[in-house]
Length: 349
Image (cartoon, rainbow, N blue to C red; front, side, top):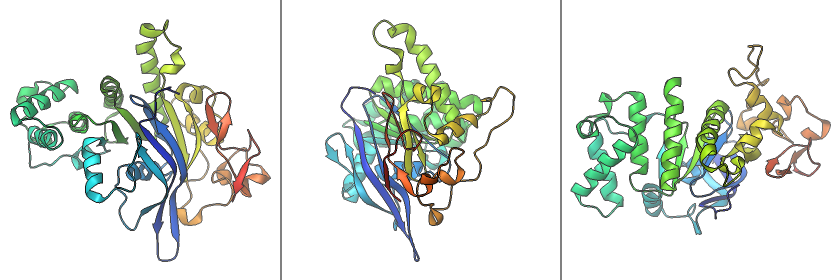
């Protein structure tokens, strides 16, 4: 972990969706932090609570959903209880967002230049001329070719990968401290995915911006981590261990964190059976060419199992797993895991 003071701190976050006959708990006691310039990967299947966690951080939980417990700190300031208008200012100025489909973030009726300039003027004290120059600089920085010509084009005139680059420029326009990137490459071709993730990581490291990268694909984080190590190892091998340059991963299942640690350590020695299953199910993860799968599926929130939420699908299940929830506790020097394979501590079911 980085020694820098956390930029974002999430403490015991609980998100509920009251229904007519029950209250569904989508996020259950989630805690983590992100340091300036760090990329934290949040991984899990659909229904794990990843996107709901990201939405709670930026104040986008639609009623009747609500944050029912815990708190979210941006630096030393609590932001989960801010009034709507104050949260909108935070979301635009201090927290940027990159979503799965770039078309949901871009107005098809306005040129990308107008959208960039309006965002910049809203949050930064710049003249229209200076804001347009910043917009051009951002388009150049994210790799848009011929930015002076393309700044006056509309979103439909860009490919999917180029639109996502524009969205990244929008997210960086107001110089935010944090970016929430929710499945930013899922709608893109495989050949473009690694380019977008690598671009996002590079830009955020250069700007000192923290990133919460939400994805269901362990392969995205694995390939990105390897690229970062290769890129930086030659430059700083004599100054710091390679492991210190790596980002961290949080693995979520059914609204809870089941494992957390430095990305390379988790890929080298996963401690939770769910993480093991996610890694094994990656394409090309098995030498014999077969594709491993995790039996079953994430349960409906109305049918949350007692005890460890993963125990109905776990190949290492023990009798106590159905009776109590294992706490998230240290395993080794820098990893955390919520599994009775490594400790006996438990919470009531």
